[in-house]
Length: 432
Ligand SMILES: [Zn+2]
Ligand SMILES: [Zn+2]
Image 1 (cartoon, helix red, strand yellow):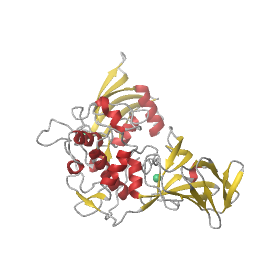
Image 2 (cartoon, protein in one colour; image 1 turned 180 degrees about the vertical axis):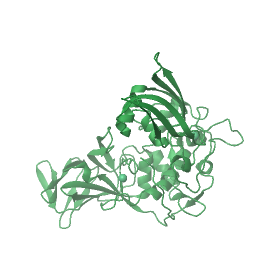
Image 3 (cartoon, protein in one colour; image 1 turned 30 degrees about the horizontal axis):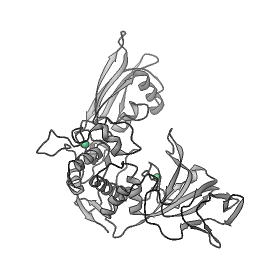
Image 4 (cartoon, helix red, strand yellow; image 1 turned 120 degrees about the vertical axis):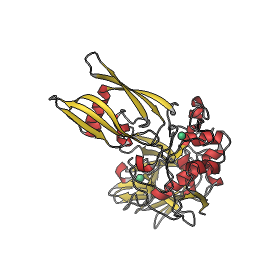
């Protein structure tokens, strides 16, 4: 996702409720299967029915109305919207809530798939031009606990979880409004907003950590909420958003990911976080473990294919050169010039204008980061055969470095010290 300029917002005085779009009209669903762990009530304007645990229910489109069925029995038939909620409010716990089948993840990506997820809070089912829309209504803190639980594993120290929660909460407040105007929800459940899979991956530790720093936000000098970006690993030096995204953000700058008194000891390096332990810490969504320093062998053919498919350069016959034109303070390449020859032998130059496009161009899906050195291996006839990339870090490097924050927590730092390190110009406040 390309980053957008953050809006300036003041801290809210109380915890908001959020309406998360779980099944969207574009998913084109006409029925959904779900089950409940406790008695729930399904209610429309004129009728209501109690849903008992142990059965699978289906809500489906029936003409211009909705119906709820169990096996062959129609339990309720009514105009949308339909409300579904537990009879007694439930505290947030791992795997607590209603289980819904066939939820789409990765909309618009080649890895798009359907998952079964367990979702806390209450629900509304709407109809949009004949398609179901499922909205999950939850409080903001539950939402944060669910979102961060997909980012981290069960071995994570509590102080890391708290620092991550404050960063995610601050970021979310700034970005999660008005993205889906004209729909019955505020935000969606996918990467387009933030990945939300309910309590499916939540642990007691993540829930406790979020509760322990409830309502805490980072504010800039001007008392606006800081859009507290985070990425997996800065690679040793964090980045200034002006160089990476092309816009300035008050409170965020570029600096070494270490204590100034011991500059050679980098928090996100294996001396703080052993690489073979990373998968225990960082949870289900992240693969393998070499993020601090990595190598990748790019073939000429993959590069040509990417330039054609992702950048519309259908005339590329041979790539002649890759020349970094600009680097950020954290050594990410922010402009990369591609020299190439077309089918008629004419030479061209094409500029990859930012780290995002560079990462898209140099990998079949997405390169870890654009902080790399490259070395061409030429064939006997002088053509580029493969390109060796020696890189550092994973992600854009702006804001909190997740592996560095983990390294600090493992070394005994508190979440307040971690946030002070990554957001030195910001103030930590309790909003509610
Ligand atoms: Zn969205
Ligand atoms: Zn780092």
